[in-house]
Length: 358
Image (cartoon, rainbow, N blue to C red):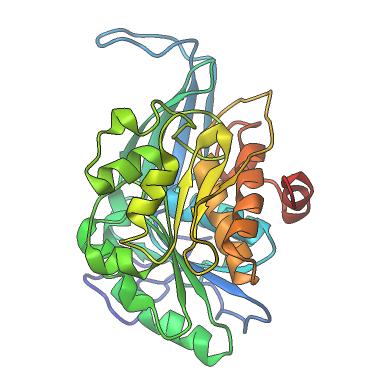
């Protein structure tokens, strides 16, 4: 990266005692991509999972069934899901110059994600602490740490270089960056570059950011939040399935139509019921994409990220939005059958075999 806000400690991913240029991972230069590319701009965390029978009440201490530590963060999760589909995936993110950062980068490399442009910074690597009950629901607490240093302005050159190499990338971003950094995401876009925006959580309503989204991906609660609607009328509680949050009970079609005035295209995720897609360029009405049925839900954490990463990969490969959503809901449904986020994601062959109507 060419832009540095503060000095960075020396060290490499594998050996913190070895000097390296500040703000780099020490990885070799990115090889010239030979196919479609997705550039993911987002967060990287190390997740700590604790299984519980039921969630504790305020002031109550409970004993967890098991503990598990793994890669997490929406940016990392979505990058892994994208790479699992066989698409060249470049992650733009920040991790600490600490053992957790080393672990995160090693996991990302193991999943096939290009981490050449992940920055090592002075702040500690982000963490998430996740409690899962026996029903598969979760409660999550996040400490942002190094993620607050991720500024899209640092990555304009990366996207430009990929374009010069003949790869017109899809840029995939989420709502976990700081609001002041999120609104700079459109600055990554050049002619022919497409933004897939998963505005989760809703941290900004910046008109320029929303107008660049193609598609904007949100669940029903997030859609209602963006439109200023009553979330109670937008579909009720979270459901385990194809994507985190949402249900089929509300007026998802109406929410999609409302958001179509803000973004180029819209996807409303509906948990176990799949998703609603509205792309005014191809059809005037929303299209419901059902999800495969899942009877053995273990953990819904990261299912929405599987959806988003898979959808971005499919779009980069030239799929239309509805067909891309079919693959995405299949990926999300497969992800809920195992504990954890990135570690639970299926590969492209299994996703395609599972897709309804594919």
